[in-house]
Amino acid sequence: MLRQIKFMLAAAVLLLLLLVGCQGQQTQPAKETPFPIATQPTTSDGIPTPAVLPPPQSGVRPTQEPNCETFSKTTYKVCDEFLSQWEYEGGLLRFGLPLSDWFYEVDEASGETYRVQYFERHIIKLMRAPHDSVMPRWGVAPKVPLGSTIYERRYPDGAPGQVPNKTGPAPLLMHIDKDIWLSGRFKEFGASDSRFMDASEWFGTAISNEFIEKNEVDGKSYKVQYFERAALEYHPENLPPDDVQFAPLGLYEFRHRYPGGIPNNPTPTPRPYTTPEPGRGCQGQIVLPPAKLTPTVSLAQAEAHVRDRYSQMNNGLQLGPLVISKYASVDITHPQSDVEIFRDAWHLGFRKDVATPTPLPTDVPADMFDMPPPLATYNVYVDAETGQVLPGCEWEVTSAP
Image (cartoon, rainbow, N blue to C red; front, side, top):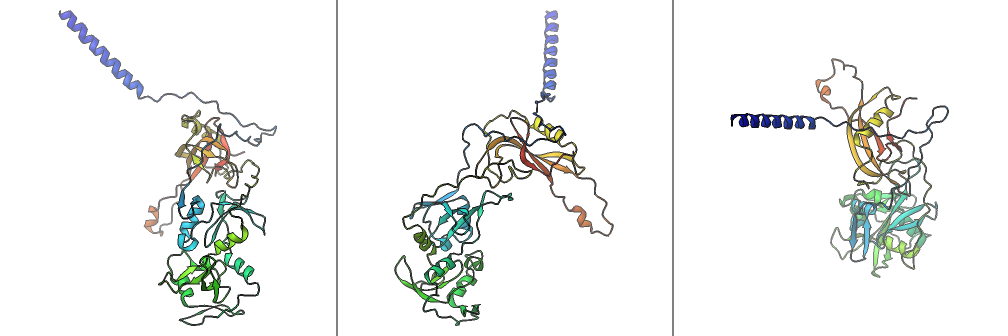
């Protein structure tokens, strides 16, 4: 019996030792099998050849869910960049309701293609970014001189019955040669109304004095004054500040250009794809969840490849600690591109290994020593399938020859 007890105790001790040993092994980091990173081909002189455009993801990648506001009175939506502009620059008060969804429109003077959306009182235009831009594809176009356009078309010799308003405190002389003045409620509306970001920016300079004009919406006549980008109407039946309103210039222009209703303008021809220069791809582009949940190239493999690729930097610095690591699907094209090519990639950011600075002079205030240094980083995108640094998707990292 004593012999059996000793045997059972020995077995228990042995089992305990085995469990402790297994736990110790689990705490050791597993060695990762190196991934065979594809090397970029070189010419006979050792110069890397231009990177080949990687193929797009299989299937159609979904775009980001649009941010829209729908207006039940006209059933049209205002979305994304148009909604941002609409909200930031006055909303209903400045633009009124949408008269259409956005569509493409060719400018008669420049021949450029714009994305446009018409509203009751104004127009929002977006233009494609120039070829040297790193901003998103479609940005806000210059302010539309809608007031000047309609005024010159309606009144080529000047509006009849104009009366310079020089009454009230400190009237403004807007044009000395044409004796154009700004005063009264129109001046107060532009100068003191806090509902606008900058009235002078959105109105522009007055191009007429006050006169009477018929409103094509309600058929009534109101005192108006035209500016470069707007026209103001005086509605004495309303109490301030609603006694001054924007004339429906957007509606006038829409009816003039499209008497048959919303046009069916074709989508413009996309610009041809070219491999972006460093810093011209990925940045500021659409980033989505990855198409493949598990990347073929792990984070450790991607980091090792980048450190090997940039082991010698032209500026003599080295890659510091890894501070950014995000796995996502990124559009690798130019910011001004009209097509989207998505790749699953690792976005890696490394601290700059800055040399120790020269000590500051003794007469420098002590609080300057406490100023935190900026978080300067080298950034690259690594293809999660091949391990290659995506062409054009690298910033401030250049290898020494």
